[in-house]
Amino acid sequence: MTAQVGAELLAGLREVLGPGGVLTDPADTAPYATDWRRLYQGRTAAVLRPANTREVAFCVASCAASGVAIVPQGGNTSMVGGAVPSEDGRQVVLSLSRMRRVRAIDPVDMTMEAEAGLTLKEAQDAADAAGAKLPLSISSEGTATIGGVLATNAGGNNTVRYGNARDMVLGLEVVLADGQVINALRRLHKDNTGYCLRQLFVGSEGTLGIITAAVLKLRPRLAEVELALCAVPDEASALTLFSRVRGQDAGALQAFEYMSATGMDFVLRHIPGAVLPLAAPAPHYALVELGSPRAGAGLRAALESVLAEALEAGEITDAVIAESGAQRAAIWKLREEHAEAQKREGASVKNDVSVPVSRVPELIVRASAACRALIPGARPVAFGHMGDGNIHMNLQQPPDMDPTAFLARGHEVMEAVNEVVRDLDGSFSAEHGVGRLKPDMLAEWRGGAELDVMRRIKAALDPAGLLNPGKVLPPG
Ligand SMILES: O=C(O)CC[C@@H](O)C(=O)O
Ligand SMILES: [Zn+2]
Image (cartoon, rainbow, N blue to C red; front, side, top):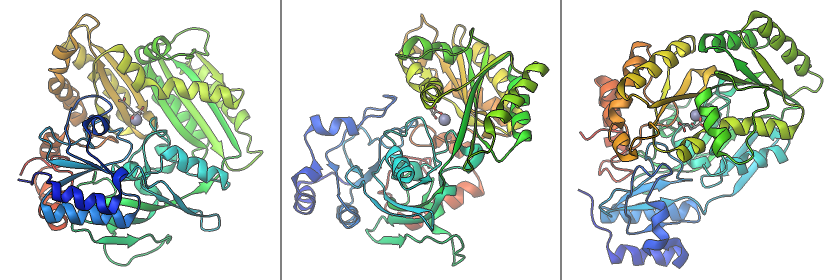
């Protein structure tokens, strides 16, 4: 059992962090205690806002000495309640929001050293200003932070080309549960000196240590980008189109996103300014993006020719290629606003699942049918990162159903989808993590020796269980 947050602890923290560094007024702490989806309504006695790594270490050591648990928090955009405190008020939130410096960018090494509280968008912009590209891109990048995307190993829209967050980390600075700091902010591409500790913290969702800064690997800035939105007759055609585009020039493909008619309809109805740039709505859509750091790479002609072939083969029925940066942004908005549009349409159950890419059409067809059979009138909303096999196999409430009654069936819905995912050799959580929502699934899917090793690592690094309790690992 963790300890209550005492007045003495708070006074000591205030002395070092300053008055603005420790929030205790419920009006100030409330936004830190709930999640974007409003799945959880926690309570916290204090939000700590350290301004540098030394202060983070001080907070962690002070809380450890008092037996108080800490919930690390970045942009608080978790889809699985990974950054919310519990309802009993015994967990303090440690927000990294004041640590937002770009410490260094090296254009020769092609690296950026950034602090955990910098938003992903700010980091992307800093890379761009230095003539480089930070290729991680997710829908919540304006709010999500570097610490958060690393702690959760975020994936997003460009995984098909650049991999996930963990593929972009060369170095890491982490505050451990006892207040020690691992300073491994190295910029090395080769470094076989013992266990690769940084990758242990990436994806650990704040349960093993608190990431305070990272060295990120940059890529050359793109000189040419071409984007198309395609109308697709069925799920199988979307996969054939993906293979065709990749087959033409695998190195140029940087996003292949799938959307269904239902999700697109929500975006067009709920998101101001959203307009479908095609002649008519389609049953399915594919967003295809090519990019090259080389000016004169001929991507426009390449895209036109591959789409002409796909049209001829009946894999697409229509397509539009963006004519400007503004049009590109408008098309991306149709995809990136799916989560917001779903929220405005009412209650939904999210299933962030992945399967081998070849099985994505089967996943969408079978899981949609399973959801419809479970709750008649519910609307499957499949969309996401088809090029890497990660589909958001979400289910929207029937229009006339009480949202609370619908959400009460959330676990049944997740299980119906997971049954299909299991059968297709997939994963119950592709990019959103486990958080507070899915530890029971972890027990079931990653049980046995895997879970045993995870528990031993947790016990070794956080023996008192003070870092983000209740997240990732099921109660032991
Ligand atoms: O809302 C979702 O289910 C997915 C959110 C995010 O991962 C996305 O790809 O837009
Ligand atoms: Zn996603």
